[in-house]
Each structure stands twice: as structure tokens, then as C-alpha cells.
Image (cartoon, rainbow, N blue to C red; front, top):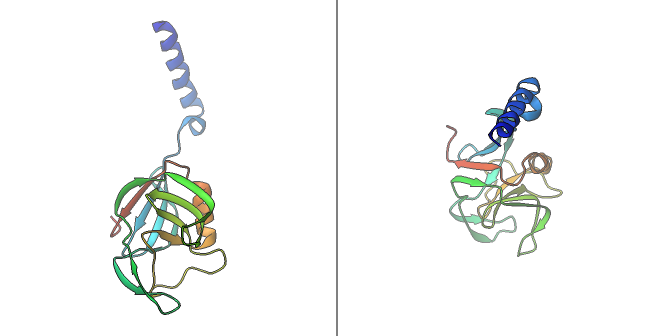
Length: 157
């Protein structure tokens, strides 16, 4: 039995040397920075894409129709993508395209199916979610499998 295990490990090592791209796992992470409002897609320690975001914040804000609403901050720290849904609709009937839930009801998702991400200083935000433009959210949704690590920091480290 020991000989068989030794042979198996030896074959794996030879395959890894001969075909490193096939045997090596792609380490993917999502890094979110709240103050500068952007997100990096990291693959094997390299930034492969950067996208502007809108995140949640603590306090009152004015909605597009003029109402004042209490918002929630985006939770900082390390999480993982727990589940994904391309056509998610929340409990209030709001579409959340390409949702990737990372903590409770907090998700990374597209801002809208048909509206671009608002410019900085827009005056409204989310209830803890991280929103992107539709094309950016689709890229992220297709690129990041369930289990992908999500780091959320105030500033870029």
C-alpha cells in the first residue's frame, strides 16, 4: 500500500512539472475598497480587472424619488461567496442581476438591468450590498465560483 501511495504521489509531481498550467489551481479573490469605491479581481496574486462600485454606508440618504431612507454599511472583513443567482429579486421586488451573496443578505450584484452605475456623489447607496455596472457584474459572476474569498477593506492596502 505504501508503494502504491508513493507511485501515485510521484506521478502527480511529474505531471505538475510537465503540465503546470493544468495541475495548478487558480487562486481567485475579490478585494473591495470602500473609501475609493472600487473592486479588484485577483488571480494568483495579480490584479486582472478593476471595477467601480457603490457600497452601503451607515446613515440616512435620499432616494431617487426624494424619500429619506436608512442605509446599512457594507460589512468589512473576510467572507466567501456563499451562493449565486443570475436573476435574483429581493424581498421588496428589486432586481439584483448577477447576485453573489457573501454574508447574509449582502451581495455583490449589478446596479440594474438597464441603468448605468451612478457617478460618485450620487446621494444614495445600498443596504450593505456592493453594486457594479451590468457588464462588470456579469464578468465577476462568470469568473468567481462559489467559495471565492471576498476581502472588504476601508482603504487599499
